[in-house]
Image (cartoon, rainbow, N blue to C red):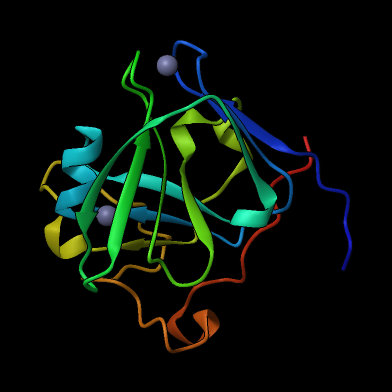
Length: 158
Ligand SMILES: [Zn+2]
Ligand SMILES: [Zn+2]
């Protein structure tokens, strides 16, 4: 299943922080929870889940730490100069980073697989009706296919 993957690259608005993702994402999810609304100032965030080992940062983002739904630590990384939200780390399921897809150099290279925490969505923020939708988090203990989520897409090899 080894298919050619060209790195995904991205960074903040001012360019002080840059990053690269060196393997196809594990998942791409839209999250409508209140924390994502507050952290981004928008209705939802679209995050790209990548393994730590495939993620590289150049620059020194600032961080802000909160406690997530599951009681774990959530560390949000952002540029201290321009304020762009870049990625999240913390006590997530496994050694993952959640990268804000809007900071990719080409956001069109990823495609969301599911929308979560729709119970918190603002009425004006409409979700793609083709996506599997969940009031809260999807059941992590079940295989994604069983709850209607297609396997993680390889990002388009542009
Ligand atoms: Zn910046
Ligand atoms: Zn969220």
